[in-house]
Amino acid sequence: MSFRIRGLDPAFFQPLFGLSLEELTRHAAIRYTVEEHHSAPDRIELRDAEPGETVLLISHEYLGGDTPYRGRLAIYVRERAKYAFDTLDDAPDAIRRRLISLLAFDANGVMADADVVEGA
Image (cartoon, rainbow, N blue to C red; front, side, top):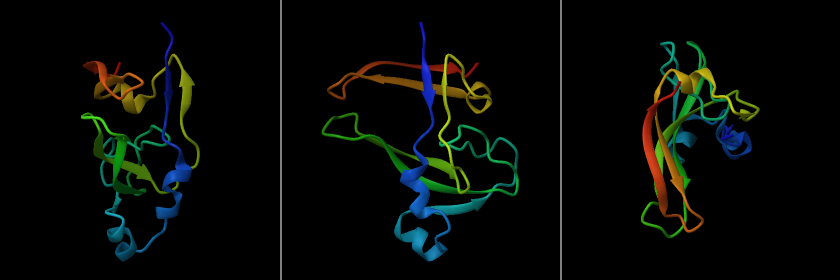
């Protein structure tokens, strides 16, 4: 079985990059300077932000539409992220080192399958 992993499109988040703290608050976002290794997994480049880098913690809708599974969660995006991760049949280290939740939805937005697995 083949699979594809893609990061989120940076164009969606770029309007938030560089905003003042006051402006970020209006978007329900918070800026952090990363202090520890492996503490802020960037959802664009699918890598851990390094200590000293800035990330935004934002609420992201991962499944929209009129479905009981509609959902949002808090994610980190690196403010300097430019290119979405995109690969076939391989997972980046930021995923491999974590316990991950896998959710599969059908075309109607209904959960078809789910599992929690080691990233490796």
